[in-house]
Every structure is written in structure tokens, then in C-alpha cells.
Length: 377
Image (cartoon, rainbow, N blue to C red; front, side, top):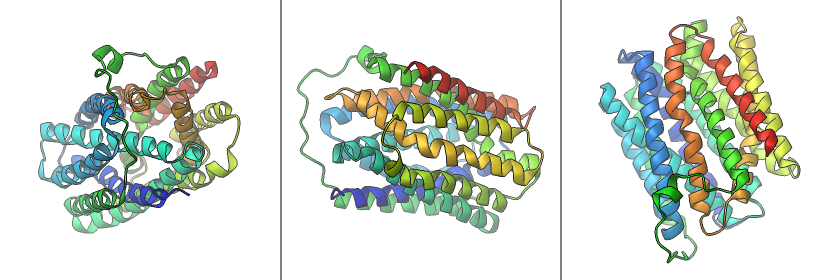
């Protein structure tokens, strides 16, 4: 175990706690303000554009100046923007806040993966699985607690708690993390073509295309729709939705915590197989009329899906990236894939008004399509 791994795992858990509160409360807050599903789709879609540009530039800059400043800035911005969210009930203000908030989230995710890889190349799959697992466990606890607090104290209280958690994570990281010496590149800054073009290794380029298709599907089912699906279709209260969202993260965390011990070979086959299983689980769960059975099937999409393939995907991306510009390659690939968040929520907003089952079904189909693309990997 490297000296910084316990700190990075703790920061990931704190980040997950804050993120879990924010993600759970926001759709209910927007609905409480009377914002329509279509407008929610626009809020989430505009945020997707911001994620793309910030992630690309931050990856390149971190190659030149190191990871720590951008990692810390992401946590600090998360604190400030989360605190401000319940203070701005207009659609335009929420577009701005959500855009900056999601940009800070994507920056954290990119920097966290890069820092972990530079901590230990050999143990990266295990490390990223464990930190992601701790983050998801914390997100699950956050959803459970948020449902109870929201019911009793309203929407602002849990978001203030989330902001405080992000600030604690920022202070801990800045105080305790000692970044390795930075080998500052002396070459020219990357051109716009290098930043935004697909000048990636062939395998990483293919993963990027598949990642975009997958993210469109993910965004359709995992934006505001995810929480509101259970409330609208089955009429359950927010506290029950909180329990479902808690289980949603726990079912992902369990395989993430052990995947580094059990997955050693055949990474591409593991990636494709469990991505396919995730898509099929979403399709089936969308059309089950019984609440308990539909929820149980839906929860398997991470237990035997994302909880296994996420660290495998991350490992392959690091392997297919180029030394010296690893931050640019990884961030660019993730940024292009994240453009699915521009398209997905708008599709979800249009479909959800007409069919409560539609977003989950279409989401699963696109995930299976992404797995088919990866057969050429």
C-alpha cells in the first residue's frame, strides 16, 4: 500500500458522501420549484457541454503543471457550488450552477484516476476499484440520509451538509497530500486540434466512441429520471426512493471493492460481458409492473455490471494512453464520451413525459450497442 492511498480512499469517500446528497436532492428540488421535465433535461444537457470543455483543458494543464492544484480546486468548487444551489430557483441560474458543478466533478474524477495511476501502475486496478467502491458506499449512505432529511427539513439542509463535506475533503487533501516532483513539459502548449481532435491510440479511440454511446444511454436513465421513475411509476415517497438509491450504490460498491482481487486477465472480455449485462438489466426492469421485482432487477445493473467493468475500463484507458500526455489522452477520451450528457437528458425529458418506462428501456439498448462496438477492441 502506497503512503497516499489511505488519504485518497478517504477523500473519495467524502467526495461520494457530498455527491450522493447533491445528486439525490437536486431532481426533487427542481420538481419542488415547478420546473418541467423538459426544462430539467435542458439544465442537465447544458452541464454536459461544460463538462466537455473543462475536462479536456484540465487534463492538458495537469500534464504541464501537476495534478494537485486541479484536484484541490475541484473539491473547493464542489463545496461552493453545492452551497449555492438551493439559493437560485431560476432555470438559467441552475444551468450555470449545474454546469460548473458537473465540471468540478469531472475534474475530480480525471485527477483522481491519474493520481492513483501515478501512485502505483501495478496495483492501479485494485486501487481504483477500492476508492470507487468507497465513494459509492458513501453515495449510498448519503442517499439514505438525504431522503430522511429532505422529508423532515426540506431541500436546503442536506445541500448545506454536502457543501460542508466537500470542504472537509478539500482541507484534508490540501494539507496531507504531497505531490511528486512535476516534470514540467517544455514543449509548446497543445493546439486546438490536439486538444479536441481524435488523435488518440486506435484502441483508445474505439473505447471513446463506445464510451460516447454508453454515456448517452447512461444519461437517459441516470439524470433526473432515476429518482423520479420510482416515485412516478409506483408512487413511493422520497424516503423509499432514498433506500433504493442507497442500494443502488451499495450494489456497485461491493464488486468494486473486490474486483482487483478476482479480475487478473482477459480485461477486454470482462469489460464487454458485464457492460452487456448492465444494459439487459435496465431493459428488463423498465417493463416489470411489480415494484419490488422491478427494483430488484434494476439493482443488478451495477452488482453484475458497472461494479465490475468500471475499474477494468479505467485500467485499459490508462494502458492505451501515451506517456507524457497521459492526462490529455485520458481526459480527452472521457470528455468526448461525456458529451453523451448533452444529448441524453434532453431525450429523457422528451420521453419521460410520454412514457415512464421509455428512458430505462432506451438506456439499456444503447449500453448493449456500446458493448457491440467494443467487440472490435
